[in-house]
Length: 170
Image (cartoon, rainbow, N blue to C red; front, side):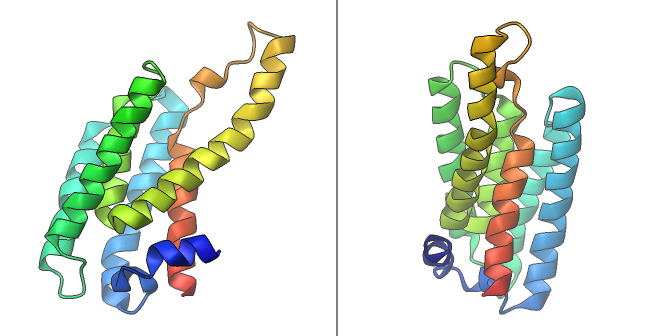
């Protein structure tokens, strides 16, 4: 909890001090995450028609709303998580897809660099908790269980939800 508060203290808007900004931020982010989870679980895709407009929306929101973090913070969050996603995709040799990367960029634009990094880290930790038993089962049943096919959108949704909940709780 201390680590989450450390990440969030740099962004006043996330701390729930502006309920109007919170509504304009949390509701669209929640809808994006719900849609991405549904499509990632159903067809293993996170669609551009959801992530790219959301990314642009969050950048514009922070640029024009008086309580927003500002355009540079939103672009920095998007660029930082885009770079982190590209690094993960490179290191995973293609197991981390483009939809995952663009979803991370949209989360970064919404939550800022530090909030986005906290959401991404929490998402990867949650995925690791589920993947670890799958990898153990893979040794017993190598053809039936694969951690490589783990959809990441649900875990990023958990991470972003945890960050938003921690911010809302203050």
